Length: 406
Image (cartoon, rainbow, N blue to C red; front, side):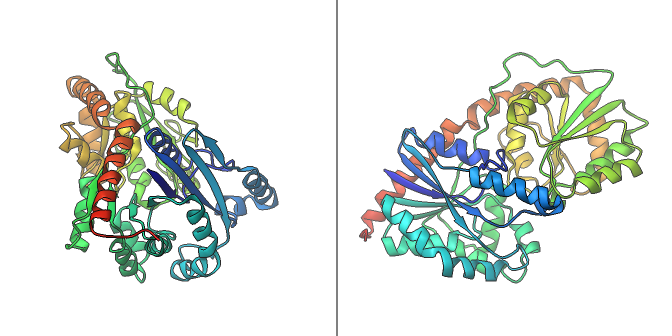
């Protein structure tokens, strides 16, 4: 079987951590079949490069030009350069522009590989274009959807119905949590071609019983700081409510344009002495910091899933999030005693943190069950095998319906 995947979210020299999980996914899948990934590379300086001025843009351009494809066994990666309009302001026009200027380039790359299945991560902006190419080539089309629909509805009120219609073009839709599946089926009740496949996580399972601090509780949060829905402000306000009830320190790992706002909020809340913003870190450093932490907290809402939750439980760190969070709710369905606060409530979040901090039995139970659940459900080998089995069945159904490859 030959599978061609498309993902704009993929590591580059400029952002080596971005899309690491897509690289893990295709690497594991390539052990079972031949995989080519096309990574559209957008030649528009990101906001952080522009804010850094000439030196920032120069660094971005240099590192983007140094980004090259790769080949490893049955996996090959090719970057496809393109330009587009600023997002999300020109989202609908942007897709039309890309379709006009770059569809043929993408079509030629796909046709040259001659895949059995075309597989696109995310809806925007490539899924609609890829769907039309798959139809032209007479091959099945898969959408692997990683976003939460409520956020898309808020960000793109005028284009949301068009995004939903893109799902109707797929022969199979992969989602990663029951929460996300419920959201999609509430929007399109007729969809019955949805497969729930868990993502993997890259850390080794922590095998020893975890030791927890009793005096100074070490808290950790891992999240990009690009979107308000991660609710880092809610987290900081919850910590401020705990300042006279609990001795703690908090490390926030991740970067983005909202970082300076959160740093200012820390000053306002008198948290600068206990909250540290670490910026973006490589995976091995994140693992070390998780191992040194007593509690992982991320009250993101809405959230489709969030690999960081699987990474935290793999290292035995108890997870605190909120109700309606795809990751927290999914872990609970798997038997994990998730601590779920009311969404957007700093008061309830602070109470949940305090209660868990003072409950060593609950922390030990969460640590043990989390590692077991991570071992059984969140590995890239399992993700690849389930994806491969799904595609094998999809190909059989596709051919049995009399579809002919062009």
